[in-house]
Image 1 (cartoon, rainbow, N blue to C red):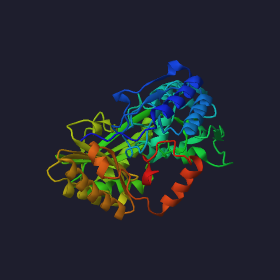
Image 2: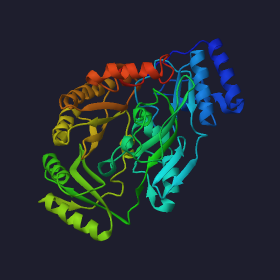
Image 3: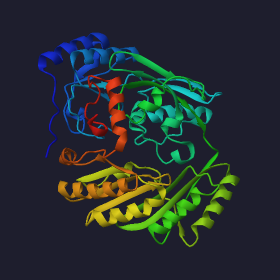
Image 4: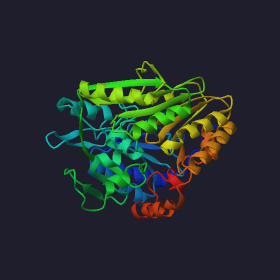
Length: 428
């Protein structure tokens, strides 16, 4: 079943709004949307590519005044995430905001435009053996702004924290045309309202990030991944809990499990070779009788979860680390005959792919797994699936008593519902 198109503004309203927007960015930077520009399978009318942060703000102001709904876009790698939009007229792309503006390598900070790809930024920083401690999906295409909006960090978060810990400043275009700046280049800056952290993970529903400032971390001299096959997922869970409670400082620690293979634990260590050797030896003591195996070349890549037979469902879950084995047993019990594979990081965030079956079976499995996760104070968020699954099943699930506050924040920043209406938690 195809996804229903979101409601759009009338042709006359759209034409007036687009005419004003074209005057801001230049007619050459406004084009008709194509099927490749669809959002959660829903078609839009136009794609706009501002060239400066000021133009982004002016475009949002014009769209708000005209009553047009805007979908912000970076590399377009996560457009299917979230709920189906309630309304959608324009994509506002940050593709032209693609400069690494400053690398203050002595201070270990970097200022980058939101449209830079993650790989572009990392390559520039690597010249001074520095990096943003970020392992985003599809880094060659995903942008900095998109990674922030989706809060997509990766396994390295275990050592260096999430994106809210790494971002220290941002410039954000708001729907009323304000270009708001918060934070700065000083790593310990705590003055003012923390817009960067508020916008991280908000899926572009509060404003469009146009620039971000990050604290950086070094690229270490050596890196090594070791892998073990425990007797059961319960034993795997015990292993990562033991490592979590030890002095070890891995930059990645995960359980990998599937419907048709053994459970595996991967641990990644970075530093100087002697230090890595010492940590590996200590980790092997925790592994006990688990059999050591060769680490796959793609052990830390999540992209394979989006590859395989269709139809499929891909979800992100969060769970208490002590409950990871219990959750995986729930996956095994509710997947039925469907093929599945999953990974869970030691800090309790993981990803799951289910393949095969019809939409009703996907909804039933997702409902059961969400119940398991939420009962343990976690979450189960559907990122990818058949269009009719997202019509029947809310992508996000419950956020408890936080929703009223989140709704008020949305009303404060975007009272007209210009940005990504309906796509975020609770239909925000």
